[in-house]
Amino acid sequence: MPRLLHIDAFTNRPLSGNPAAVCFLDHEADATWMQAVGNEMNLPETAFVRPIAGPPGSYELRWFTPAVEVDLCGHATIASAHALWQEGRVPAGQPIFFHTRSGILTATRSAELIELDFPSVPVSEAQPPAGLLTAVGLETVQIRFAGRSQFDLFLEVDSPELLRRLSPNFFALAQIPTRGIIVTSRSDDEQYDYLARFFAPAAGIPEDHATGSAHCALAPYWQAKLGQDKFIAYQASPRGGIIHTEVRGNRITLAGQAVTVARGELIA
Image (cartoon, rainbow, N blue to C red; front, side, top):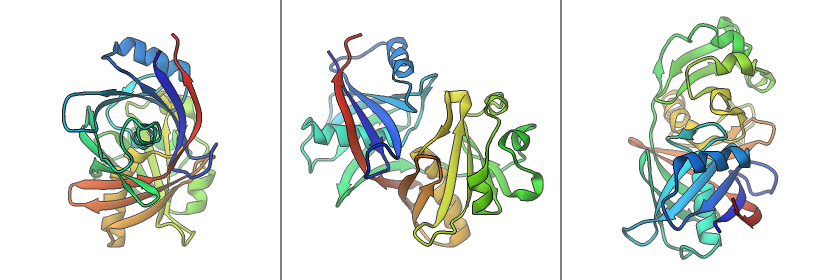
């Protein structure tokens, strides 16, 4: 029976950050079954990890929301690395090489942080699609920048207060053809360089709590605006999440902590 862990990522406290289920497989599984498990777990992501041929620490990794399989997910990758090291499936000091739909993603340890090597996902300026601003609860004068990345729509708003009080119409947002909507602002807390929220109702996640892949777009965007390469970001969701990022050319280092909340076995 597959081993299953419930892990909170981008946090050092249980019941905060972004939750993910991590399921250990010993053989290739059917995607329909994995999607059904993702729906059953009803967490922002369920990750499936399976050892494959290659250097030590080589694993296939796939991510499923309750509704769809996704191409890139940061918090469930942090959770998967944490699970493999904590459960002793990979020695603590050994890197992990995740083979994914977005290429090979490497996970390493650095002090208390788990570091991921992810692709940069730059943002290009673009007009917001019809209905987006109304669905998010914004007016044109409140937007400093509008654009899109490979995966998501992107908005910078003019104040942290505005970012925090957003209350989108999720039904309307789900009608817009995109994986998700990134909303960001400068931080008014000196601990952090920028703030963000992420909405993805079309993928079965009304608001994601801490979205690593979104920061693959956010980090290069704020690099151009702030003239720095390293950031500490806060995702201002109800649960919150702290994401460390560094821009390294066309790669992004995402780093954070994770804690295990529950362990069990999947019998279905």
